[in-house]
Image 1 (cartoon, rainbow, N blue to C red):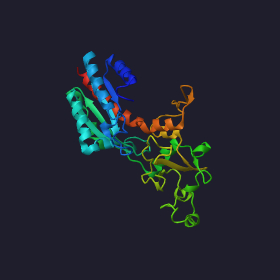
Image 2: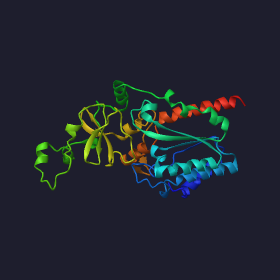
Image 3: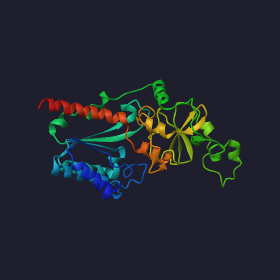
Length: 319
């Protein structure tokens, strides 16, 4: 969304017409992600950060600044442009009167979700007394979890039903993708000038259930070595370079949209329903994958939010 669009301005007006204690912001990560072009503030999506700053200023003029800003982005935000981007972000937040605390948390270590997902969480406190009480980021080892391979397998089973056949469109077969099932004899019979550098055969490479594999840039297959799913991306499942693949009882396939959302902690089928229609048209898989790839890991957000609420409750009880 453009920071100066009609939609953004309407949202800003709504936000500034009410007192807010905690303002959540997840300005788009693609502008800073290593999976994108890393244009940062040169990308309109990167400029949405300034919309957050402007919203805080509007709230201050109408009521008061939010007590806390809760921001999230890709890990690469800190390293982008040799650290200059994050320095600008932190400086601007401090200019409007906040104490900034940040930490990089990996979903696979701070929740029971089997996904390798590193994100930076930026918690900004208006009041020093609140900032001093929030010590979570100084004691992350206390919150860190570890799981055995068997425990990871059980987590994966709770997300993916290996015994029920998924729709045919998710499966990779030799009929649909002959270039992904090339035998050694077939490869050797291809003229050198037409032969790819790597021979791909998914049946030979994807052999274990309860594991995740990646078809990297259509060139080679890699098993994820830490027994969890690789980071979900917005282009995942739509021909992008980072397509998680699994082996179930019926063959080799990519994750379904429902599974990717469950890997983010959304209880699909258990109180959470995926959209099916938008403006009278069928809601496509590509948009569902994009939503999952751009989403936050719900249990990690809940963990941090719980610690923030403890701080606020303790401070308020002493007033």
